[in-house]
Image (cartoon, rainbow, N blue to C red; front, side):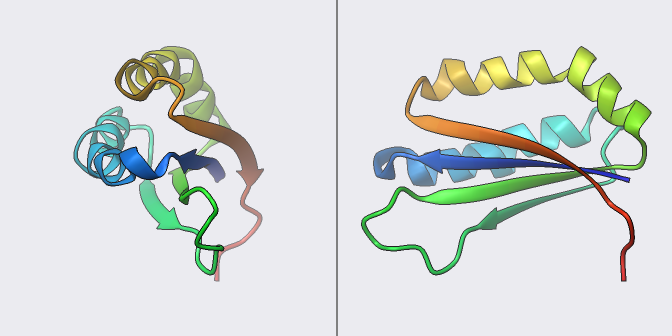
Amino acid sequence: MILYNVTVQTEHEIEQEWIRWMQQEHIPEILATGLVEEARLCRLADTPEDSAPTYAAQYFFPSREQYDRYLSEYAPGLRQKGLDRFGSRFMAFRTTLEVLSRH
């Protein structure tokens, strides 16, 4: 299993709009690819009040092949939608993890 984690910092002014967009548009579009087994949107807890709002969007792919297919066929267009909507008002950092076990 592959865990694709996207850590995002938003400007305070767009935070609520970004959350709605993630929950109502972006994550449903990713799930609609049929390649993702589960998706989560998490907020970093215990962050200083003066820091940028920080979130982690997590996508669980059953196999590396499905993850690679997502990256080649869907990710560029979906990323562009976020850029078109929010421009440079957010910053994303992506990591890919191989899940060794779930308990």
